[in-house]
Image 1 (spheres, helix red, strand yellow):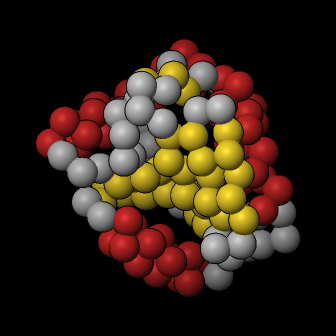
Image 2 (cartoon, one colour):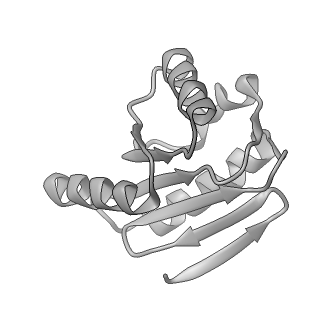
Length: 126
């Protein structure tokens, strides 16, 4: 781990080739939170061909859908993404989000699996 950023809604962990977010229980992830997240994604990936993102959903929180839809203006890059959930409710939420957002994120049931999947994908992109 290279760096840790504490945000009002959670924590961002920075590694060489990806970020991991862990948001707090009952946090509301709004546009301001997305601005912070994309700031870190964009700055740490600046000189890299490929850089990924893992959403480690240790806690349950709320994403403001209308705010998420505005995030396209925050970056020109597409980040390979893995989402880690630990129960059926989390999996169902992810499946709903995937339909609504039309995202290409990969679902995992452990952080180790997400890291292995993501780093394997990043190697194939480079």
